Image (cartoon, rainbow, N blue to C red; front, side, top):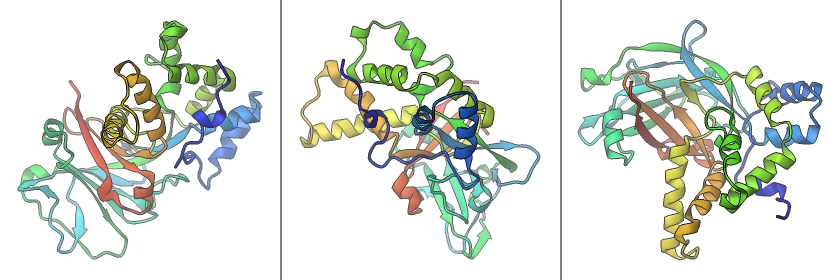
Length: 316
């Protein structure tokens, strides 16, 4: 098999490195990796895939937002609803209090509010039962009067910390793609899977050390996060719709059923450069988890109404 061009798996249209901020996280990571004897060019390749997210948790420290509570909305704005169904407030964050991550274009100030009726959103799947509202600093606001008591949940103040994230195919653990592919014969892999394996073997020989270092510097964790990689199921759904739409429009030839999975994997890889997680919830109040995702360009323009939401049920 011929060598895989670096840009096949690195820089994609619209891609941005999301890890580094004015606090020189890049320099911190690079210096630590160099001390381990890892070549600089390999560090740069790995860093292309490394993103920092902002983990939110209930605990001591300076609050950056809260779960639940009553929102402050612009004067005259009605409580967000889907038709006659008001949407509970899940989360609100003070953008000015959050850690900054270059390439993750959150507004520098103001408040982001996430509303969702998780039970309805899970059952419907259209996204109409979720809203993201941005209130810029300087806007005249007032504490909104809830349409019903079910819209106001217990208020829990949250603090923030940075976490390291990698795309699914570079993660370790039970879903380690290395272990998964080791059980496959080369001929059973799709062409795109073969490309990824070749890339990791040839260009990231110190992958285990780099992953461990990133986790040491910015420990990963469960729970709610702002930023990072979009939920894999959400990206998968977007990729399926995108490919189906291109087929229908005739912009690509009809994809043979036997090759659909390979086309889908490649499309998902491309879409991870266009989409980012705006917020991901992990069973704060109910047995549901909601992921809000958004395109980079829409976030940069504060078009948060363009965010998509998908809710999953998580058994206790």
